[in-house]
Each structure stands twice: as C-alpha cells, then as structure tokens.
Image 1 (cartoon, one colour):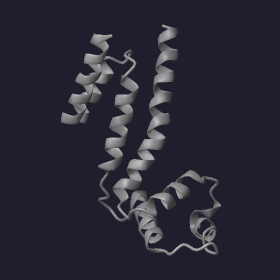
Image 2 (image 1 turned 180 degrees about the horizontal axis):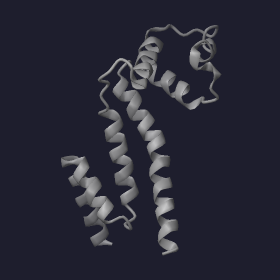
Image 3 (image 1 turned 90 degrees about the vertical axis):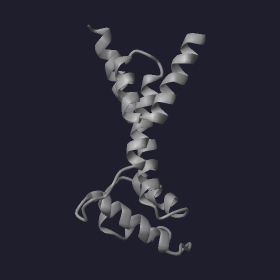
Length: 140
C-alpha cells in the first residue's frame, strides 16, 4: 500500500515538472493502474496548450465560434437558433456545440475550450487505449 502511494506521488510530481517525461515513465509501466490517468492528464495538458498557428486550421474555426458565442447575448428566442443556424448544423454531433456554448458563457479563451474537449474526449481515448492493451496482453 505504501509503495503504491509513493509511486502515485512520484509520478504526479514528475508530471508537474515535465508532463512529457511522466508520459514516457507511464508507458514504461503500462501495466500499473495509474498509467491511464497520467495519459489522460497529458491529453488535457496538450489540449490546454494547443496553439493556433494558421488561420486555415479547424481549431481556428472552433476558436472563432467560441468568441462569437461569447459576444452574443442569449435569449430564449435565439437559444436554439445558435445550434442550427450555421454550416455545421447538418452534423448530428451535439457534444461540441453544447460544450462550446457552455464554455462561452464563462470565457472566450480557446485554451479553456480545447482543455474541456481534451478532458471529455481524452477520458474515453485513454480508457479505450488501455482496454485494447489489456485485450492484446491477454492473448499473448
């Protein structure tokens, strides 16, 4: 129990000092129970620190949508129109527009938006990767 606690503290201290090194340490110990959480934390770190360097990137479109939503006054009449009035309304995805809308009520900083995306989707990504790893290790 004490050894596992020390390992947990050690990896999170490494994560605070250098997230990429903690990811490498986690991959070396891929059978440990804390590894998927380190991968998830790295995905969140990457999402928050994502940098838009070109106007043609899709990320720029998401950032502009966030900024426009942040500057829009929301009434009960135009609430649903926000989700169905643009070129993206033909998609069945509701998670991205709702997440963008909720974040836009607090800030127009795209780092917060990408961090929220990373929090949500990184959870499922990290769990799916370790699910596949567990399946492949069983059959070896």
